[in-house]
Length: 496
Length: 138
Image (cartoon, rainbow over all chains, first blue to last red; front, top):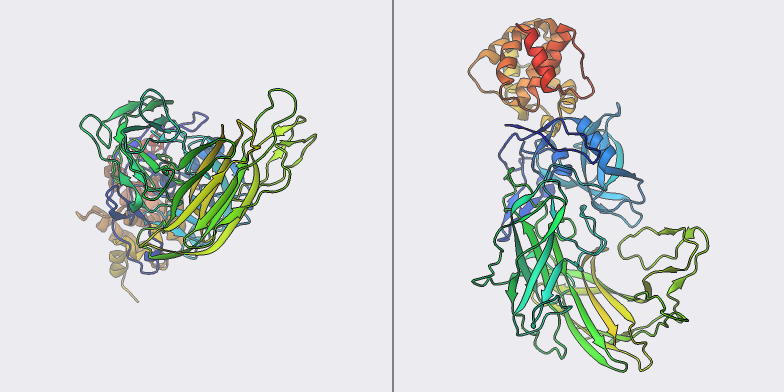
């Protein structure tokens, strides 16, 4: 039962009371708490209950992915000071840290915000209760408030701890590696190289051997050896259950998962590639892109405290920074051209037979700086969407769209359609501000989906004859269940 | 009303201490103990409980961390000056393989007797402080 040394906050303050107590896991015995117990889903899709254990406590869960027990609230307060910033209720996001204090203002408990309402307030927390299990619960659950108190505060972790391994793959270009990502389907770190080989391509080539690899980052100050990556593919869907992902078959020279490799401290490494031969989805004129998933790991044992980088949320792309997905398809159109794409709209949860979902479509125009003279005009493509047997509908664009926001002083920017509870951004620039603009948006509600058969989603894109060469648009397709985005797909439309 | 022996036997099983499993730190566990009815009943019995606790601690039975911590809390609450004789031997043994709770509860009681600085807001003592406490036992 050694004391763990060398773990430091961002300000280089060493944590004093980190312990590896060992400890086995036992099942939850309180019937009222059984529904709240969380499970670990292994790569083989078997479940393991995260029951009672003294291997890690709430603080170890919050800050040291299930590895160790932190015994002192002083260490926790130091982490909150050095690695986190306070966040006010009303601005909360999933993944934020919730801190409990008692009436003496002593830190007693922490967890992660699991769910927020549309006003940015915490509705569910995921936390480990001392030596008990890991639960998802309301913030002021009656079992814990007499012990932990009701003095709640929220924080956002902005820097990793030092001295403890942390592998990650970007979920989106703006990802910083912290828990929970808003955009979870457009990883720039998952790459495809279609023949002829030599450089990354935007889309795979069907019926040919493509190379798929990932860039894996290490944001700790210690090398991580024995890293492997598993690569999966899936039919083009908006949302995925873990069982939707198919392991790309390994080949003799390129096994999947990959052979072990080392990611040096505070750097990145290209994982070995696997060879993937996608087949076109039947009945689709323009073969659809398939979705890719990469998981960087050392092993798949949540009880192995010698693992420098245990997974916390296997198959949870948003929550687990070791996992990234790429559900992006690039369509290139000439003026007057039309292209199509077929996607599926399925049940994104294992073991659930039927859900009622919503579909959100948002067409955006990517900003471009003018090379000379007037800024480029926005002449968007016509986007038609057909769901199942329903009549196709057209995504109507707004009137004239300016890509420049002329902001000459501090003001709250006009807010885009609120897909992800993003807070309005405040710009203080005294120059014209370029940003991606929503030019059309539609939500289709109450779509019943069954596990037996995905709802087909047919898309077509037509570039007007007057389309501006070089302009770029993106269609974001989001699947929403109970107001939560459970999956998404992006189609990038380039006008050649 | 349960006998003292029954109460102490019950404390040897942490599940009988309501919410003790919720404690992530010695500070939180101390709060739990301070409101547990069984522990309060034992404390009310006063010094008569001390020999029985000493006997349990000196026995061969391997007790869970939470139970050991509960006994240390009771000793400190009844008569801190009894801590060196009742808790001292177990404290010295457990220092070799410390757990999350007992060594801190015992150190807190012993340091009260030895008039060493206390940490009531964390109830966690560093390795140096534990060694300092142990040295005073000799």
